[in-house]
Amino acid sequence: MLSFHSISSFGKGAIRRFPSNVSDVKQRAARHFEDVLQCAIPAFEGLFPDSHDEVVRILLFRLAEWHALAKLRIHTDDSLDLLSRATRCL
Image 1: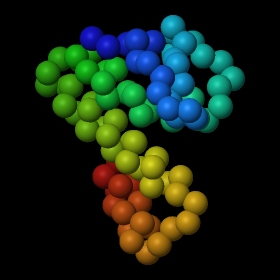
Image 2: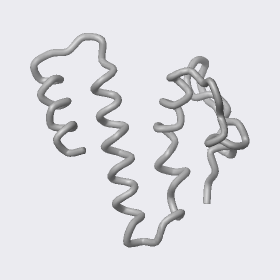
Image 3: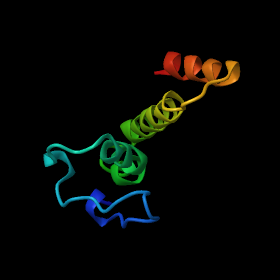
Image 4: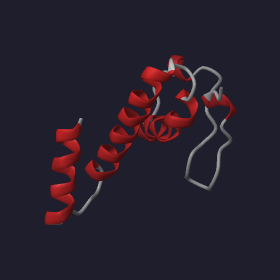
């Protein structure tokens, strides 16, 4: 099982090192929550019984997909259509 703290940082301005207790973090910027979302799938792997693990992974992927589409600064008709579909999937 992989914890958030064991995930190393990478890239300048990309994912930063996680604190030892991610759930206890206070006053973090939005980028920290985005980093948690991006690393949640490997960190959550194996935490749940097999019957729930796949559902959790799909939910985390859908949340990350929705977040990536929602934060686009300029939308096209196609990107708005993808965002609408992603919202319905959630």
